[in-house]
Length: 629
Ligand code: COA
Ligand code: AMP
Image (cartoon, rainbow, N blue to C red; front, side, top):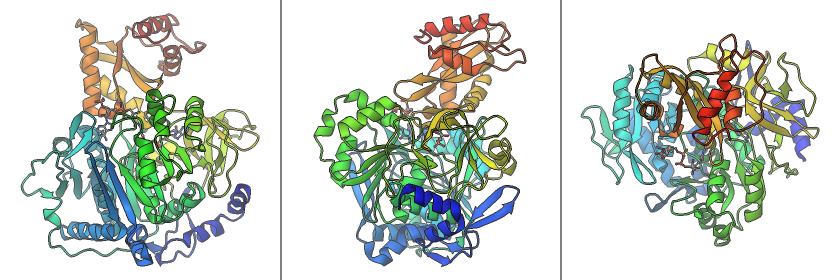
């Protein structure tokens, strides 16, 4: 069947389409139907089925004879180590870990926060939660203690599983003091913590609260898989919204199993047994879906890579791994390819490796700029597929259905909508626009299986953020267009979310941090264009009357404050003191105009601007740091 036939067959009978896809999953009790309409624009999938994620991701492959196949390959240039874990080993390790968690009181529905670097134990912790029906919430290691504390207070975990440290090139990330600091700051306290002690740093354990990962598992009874309802939350993953309070995206068990399993063949074009690699981090949605769950559910081998595209040790690391493990499909962020391209523009490293097993490279997480795609096509001589999705959706909204049909690639477009997604471009009034016209990108409800049903403890926020603006649709927060061939183009965010090195960050959250500085009266944070990271945050602060300290002292404190409160991942290093911020007459800060000035782009001052002279002041300040040329 061609892509169009598959898409049309979904559209003609979504219920039959998804029930058929659900047959690939081992259910303890098969669902009686796919879609459950909860009313008021809320939907759930496979709600009356009973199923276990860990069984489907691990045990069933052992039963089916894949026990000796590598389930996880850990390749860690930063610790100079490599390790393989077979499916049977993974089953045994996860069952024991789950048994130990159960012995300490973890049950179905309890929340468990996981704060770990890129080591197989992070996946094992996720799978052990899934085995018990506990709901995990993985927090990215580049976040600060304060961000971790916010998540602890929202998810209210019974336990936290962490590692003693992470390794960033040139420095050890001390997880344990961050964890201790977060627990001190949070109002909610976990019953206990489990700490995986790494060779690189042995952390101090607090008597009575902290258990050693190994000691705590000693002599316990392994746990069996606990069947849960199809609509039981598998996990909560916090993502940036427009304010400092992150949104807790929920993923339901049944929908995730069906959708991720479907995506492995139809989008990533791999068969069970193939090696699949997503070079992301388990702290992000790509890590949840395509390092941990999808490859394992589908019986693939997944690679847990602890390193960077460059410098660990060189720009050939990606290609070395692809050769060494015979990777079939490779998923990374455009920023990572830009980093490689900068170090190896002619692709000299590529020539050193045999990439004959690689079928294609998949890019997501941010806009894939044409230069980078063209460079990758040239040096790799492989198809480069951009695809577009979000933490909220958990899998591709628009992409290349390479396992169904290899459509022509149009550079600048992540290709076409996947079955399940009726993507529409809407004007401000919520009316579909003509093809080729720009508008807000929305998806007609219901969203497909595997996408968010609501936000954790925040249904009102879910409605306000995604449903209220365009009744009957899910608002993606992205703007773009669809061409006459049905290809989608993603142009910009419609909110204050920015994308830094493929990491989604809230400028509103950074503004909240800057506003708390005692000398800052007012501030704005914008995302300026960056050759490597796509965007970088830039702060503008106006000082409180009477403050008379050197400006560089204050901006250095602001930079430190954002690193402390949000984390190094914010990459907040650009901060300027200005006298005034440009605003409309009603007091709205003209952030979009400031972005244009910083990027030296054409712009027209809005008619509603209060004092156009301020734009010149902003331009002058920017030229002092090499922007607004
Ligand atoms: N734990 C702790 N700190 C982390 C971290 C982690 N897991 N990940 C990143 N950081 C830190 C970095 O060390 C850096 O700190 P610094 O300010 O002390 O240098 C900071 O956060 C910013 O990191 P990053 O934006 O990743 O920049 P970088 O300069 O370290 O590397 C790239 C640049 C392009 C090589 C890198 O960003 C990269 O590989 N990006 C790919 C992103 C990706 O795969 N995203 C997945 C989304 S799908
Ligand atoms: P995240 O939730 O971190 O995955 O970020 C999702 C956001 O990243 C999207 O809403 C887009 O703004 C952006 N994004 C992700 N993939 C792409 C892509 N392929 N092209 C353009 N933007 C993308």
